[in-house]
Length: 607
Image (cartoon, rainbow, N blue to C red; front, side):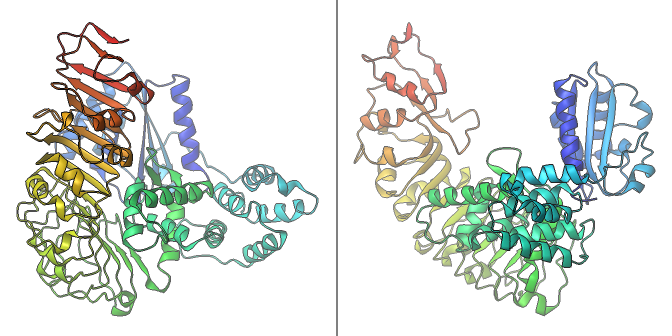
């Protein structure tokens, strides 16, 4: 049953298998409803440190089989959330070759899947007993439920969760600290709840999640939660992308800067995780959603046809929907499908604010007048598609604030965005654009820009127009670094992999040297020509790569005080970090990584 704790159990199995060295390698893959053989193979291969560069699923399977059988270390493969039979030989290894080197565990809601895959042992995960349920519920609801006035009431609420851990966790967290009157109201609602038409979701789990949603304190928290269901099942959802959508949709009231907006969204996500409505993703910068919670979130979001979510469902065509369904639609997600063609006629979506077509890898063109009747659109995500240009009708999107064109590897022409006067965020990373927009009207409200190498020259010459820019990410800046700093007075994030400035900005004082370095919260700058950062720097880091040919300016030393990653190239001092040298010892207050390159006179690092 959905929400009974299958995934939690196998995660603990994986942890114990590693800690007790029962297996040399432990691999866990979430399958979900739509089986993607290549993705499954990729996850397994990456966990085993194996490169799979081949396109053929069959060839990849043979390579994986060789790796799994030709090893001294036993491998445990956990396939989580199977909805139908999976032929293991198509993924990695025929059953006949498994022998003693590879064992497979699967979880599924359907016992028939276990039988059709000829599992050697089938374990039914039953609901919790009354006492187990109460213990879990109490751990989330708090010790107050043990009081004389609350104990019986709270136990009755816990019983209504029917021994399902997901329901107990979510509802317990939602009711923590609430008045007895609210507990009584919830108990009545639980008793009156009816079956819901959601595959694999019991009425107890549905009602618990729905009540927890109803208890959320603000519209911003509700919006943040519902935006997570726009992503496919089991996806890592980047906190930064959620911030972009929330800001672009005007859903964060009273927030001035993008950095403040990110802090607000991170706080909302922490609250949702504390409620059990969201889970921690694979990294600190991501969250994820339990598939049952996502099903309920979609059900809630589609009320009155406000959301329309068909993400990750292998759709090949634009959805056929009656006009009434789309007249009120505000968020439309067709993310991660196989759509090749869009309808040739303009789409009549007059209230649509968010449209996500990302990861439709075969989508190569957009009809010229497709966006003509989407005047309310604020967020448009076309990333990871094969489009070569943006259509003329993009200029009709006069309310558009966020345009995501990341990893559109064939995209050349974005000239039609010149009419987007309120655009705040433009993402072009990984897209080889060569035909840029004319005019400057579209630049005046930009706050976030993430560029590909091909647009560096265009933007290097045009930064004086970007008066509101707060966050800039680019591969190479070829211009006056001094002019960049003068023109961008609101910068808080500055990431440039290679700064090329013939005036040697490292030794020249820039205007207001005591202000802009203090204003930068996060940065990564390389001032070594033809030697950009050679390792990945996350957007949470503060890094500098410097060439020491002349004395360093005060502004550089101010940045050094907060630098975490530092690379020094061709510094001439014998004693690199000291009171007598150009680099003060104070840098060590934040420094985590130091690399010294080509410094032949160096005899002592610090003193």
